[in-house]
Amino acid sequence: MANIVGVVTTKQGSVAGGAPIFYVEDREQLQTFAHLLEKVLDCAAHEVNKDLFIIVNRH
Image (tube, rainbow, N blue to C red; front, side, top):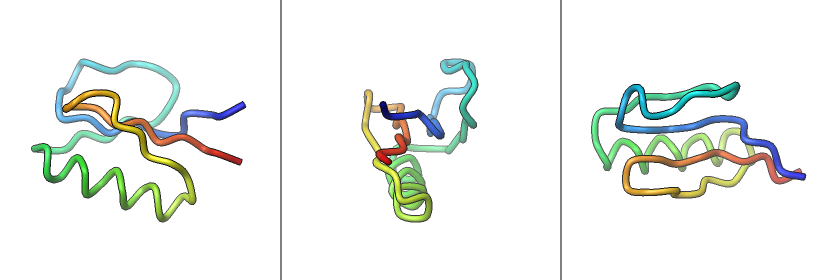
């Protein structure tokens, strides 16, 4: 089963839970930061909506 290891969003207060939450300023930073985490953590970044990515451990 996959585990959510992080969340990246542009909207503060829109996400809660046990995974680390990273807030960014705009959509460009959202995509850049999500893909950076994807590479560094060897995980998968999934776009949930235009303001939210989840980082999922695929191992």
